[in-house]
Length: 256
Image (tube, rainbow, N blue to C red):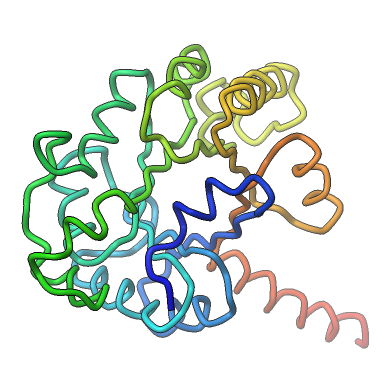
């Protein structure tokens, strides 16, 4: 089985990438999701209940599948990034990236010196990827994925320069945060939100940077996203769980 294949998938324009954001701190649920054939899980340390204690077991739960374990770090700081990578993460999802300089710093945190600033310590990661300790860097450094969340007014303003940064593997529109930053939380039909999204879409597609969005609620929405150039699609484990239970309760209520 090929390992760390997500970066290769991202370079193939014909492939759509499905991701599940895991806010539930459970290796069991992560393993179940990974076994479906989904492309990646995003283990969420920014908005999820995932502590460092859970991080290793959730990453390890993807072993034996084609599912890439990504981590959305709490902040775009080296101390969060290096522990996630050293636990065996295949890539990092960076929140609150505002400009080109911050995007460059994010990429540098995935690379070892002299190309970057990642500290050397894959004492756990090398076993997750079934290689020797001293072979990890040569085999996997350039396969680690960097995904940037676009969720602020500043990021929208600077989106062209952000997309120009070498080493950015994808940008993802975080629509809940972006609408909040625009002063219209949850109003995805507002002209200001639509304008911001169109600017991001245009810049990413022009630069050839894979673009992500979601949650995607149905096949019709999925088809619309594809027409607009999106290639990454995310949903949340806790919302799927809640919606599934509510659907069953609706059956009960319909018969009462």
